[in-house]
Length: 435
Ligand code: CTP
Image (tube, rainbow, N blue to C red; front, side, top):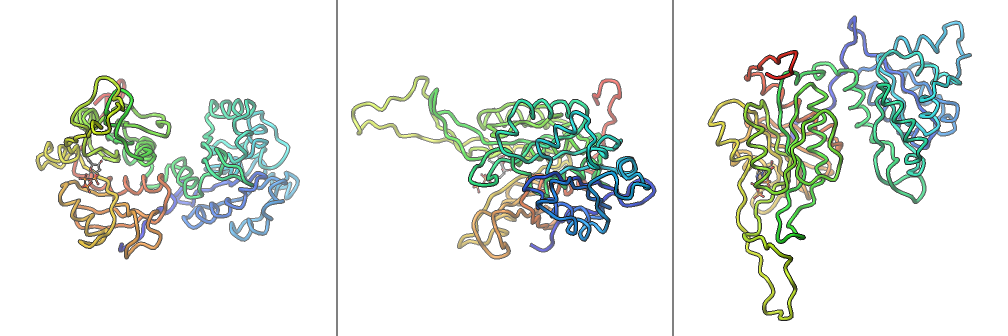
């Protein structure tokens, strides 16, 4: 682990100035996390003005916002009225983010109310708007909130899905504010963040995600715990950066992202076929799927019965699945295209540390980049489970300390983009979108 990857500096807005972000904070307990988001945005070069609602000041006082943003803070339209802040802020912003957005704030925004400074800003903003909901599960799932969110999205407002997990008190479920790093990543995407922006425009990429399932009989399978979240984040990030994306999806526990072509694959063999077909002519293939190395040699056509005699208990014989990544490396036969990215979860053992195992796997697989995730504890990692290291075939090594899958996804594409420079793009037909 030699160097850290932090989100890059903010893109300069028109005229070379720092991008102006209005950070709205509504009255929910998650308001305290907005302070971390504010810090992340200011530290990456954004000029942030905080507009809290009056209710949010019960959770975080304005001194915190003023100190962290370096700007005065108001909640109503009467403060500094001569500057007409409710029009000026909205008009001049490059992005408005509201985090947390409560059920009440979503309702007011959906219905165009303008009873405080923040809702006035939302009505006067001509820039992208990002709303980040946080509330109790029942409130999030209430038909009124669902309808408000649908209306806002229909109008082009980006409303993030809340995270699932522990809420205020003992309850847990969907309704948590996503992590500040995830919100910042979404904000940067909406701002068209600098060099990132549309840096995959004109590229066609393939991402595999999720865990394969190898059938034993019509109702049972050998599977794994992969949720597919990282692969889905990679596909979403590539699409946001302008790529045409094929997501080859094995079993996923998360919804597929918008704006990507999805090909479903159940088994490793099906996934191998789908990835190989999609890889033809692609610029990059990222193998984030957890592909079973083995499958049952025989698949029973009828459900396997327990039977009376324990001596007759079935024995499962396994046979090897194809190594999809190795197949892609062989198929490109030394050509630079497509760029190939593998994933590996490793532990250290008596034969070497995580990095040694990662390097050996990178060499063995012959891919261009290996996203190494340590499972367990060895030197070099403080909090092992949350870090990945990007190992390049050129010997490069970059640590991504953030745990967020979106941050990791952008870091992977950041590493892939320079590798794509050697591959020329085929201009798309502007009428059909086809090469
Ligand atoms: N992979 C693949 N085909 C397989 C198994 C794995 O393409 N049959 C890909 C994975 O998607 C991942 C990379 O290879 O990108 C590394 O997977 P991993 O399971 O760590 O590699 P193995 O070669 O199976 O090594 P190990 O013996 O450590 O499990």
